[in-house]
Image (cartoon, rainbow, N blue to C red):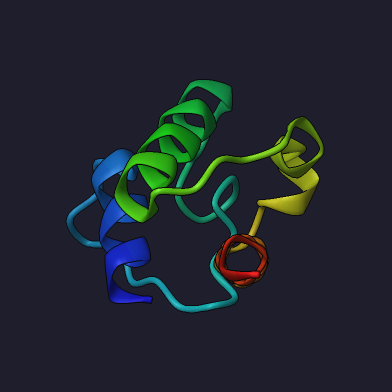
Length: 80
């Protein structure tokens, strides 16, 4: 979770933001489509996973909790 939060805050470019699982990337951190693309790319590189096109819908990645769930599912399916 710490690595994920670090990536999220670096892309948000906000040093004074507090992140928890309820943090909304759009409302709380000002994420736009470009930041979401950067986030997906950085997560793929950092965690050595690949997102499917269905996973990339912003509605599925809007909160830290939702993003964490997708990431955990990707890691589990990779290990199978």
